[in-house]
Length: 105
Ligand code: FES
Image 1 (spheres, rainbow, N blue to C red):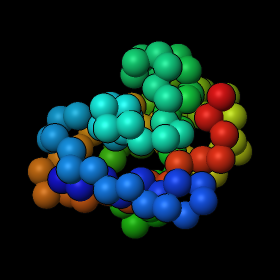
Image 2 (cartoon, rainbow, N blue to C red):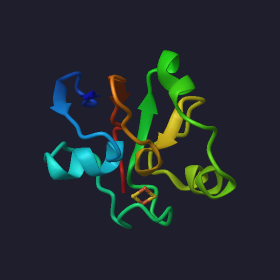
Image 3 (tube, rainbow, N blue to C red):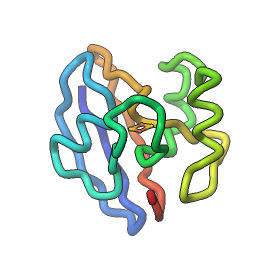
Image 4 (tube, rainbow, N blue to C red):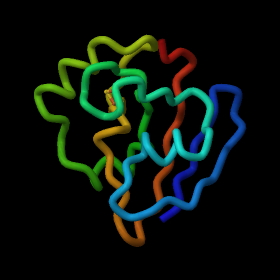
């Protein structure tokens, strides 16, 4: 599946990801700017914050309580489509569009 990462300036980076990887690890592996993933996906940093295309939120289960708590600690403002990308798993045949926030740390 492809992940389209829109940078704060509007540039889009398209990555061919692997099923089962997260949106965070796909970004880090491929050098997508603005997704840090400091804690490695253990829900203790909030530096993997992204805004998910609203039509695609349905592909993911609602945030767990731990993710919800960490979403209160993001460097850029939380929005109704904010998620922590380490919690978003790529699935077969599901392309995703996410926007990277202005600030991550
Ligand atoms: Fe740290 Fe997602 S990588 S919370």
